[in-house]
Image (cartoon, rainbow, N blue to C red):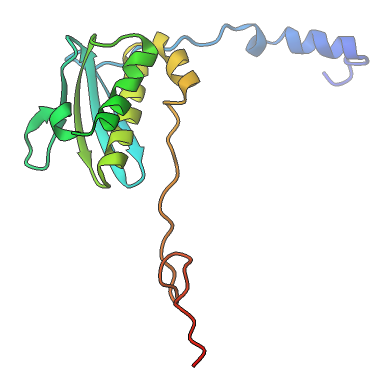
Length: 167
């Protein structure tokens, strides 16, 4: 085969004639369970959220620390956190069309809201692959990898030293 290629045009004909180039890209399939739900895990800081999304009327339930499912406005009382949770639906243009059930653990409220937002975005694109482009362009499918730096020995915090004393 290497002997047959003597010029750049020969190389182009070999590359364009291969099966890998001529095949159409694989189309994404919706991933749903027997109940019509899509599942995804979202992460932010130390928080982890398990999120289930299914077509519905816009019901949004979060599991609290007592094991009960409560409305997201009750769990995330701050309006800023509620806005963060609604962002994936607003960007995709499907507000009020999906029911969400989420279980959150670890971290604080801000990290938990970010984790649920990440999980919703992942689950939405699994449920309806056509929404992937809008969610990806907004940056919602990328996990925010910033975490707190660990404390080092001999230091007061991660980088802060103890106060210097001359005497």
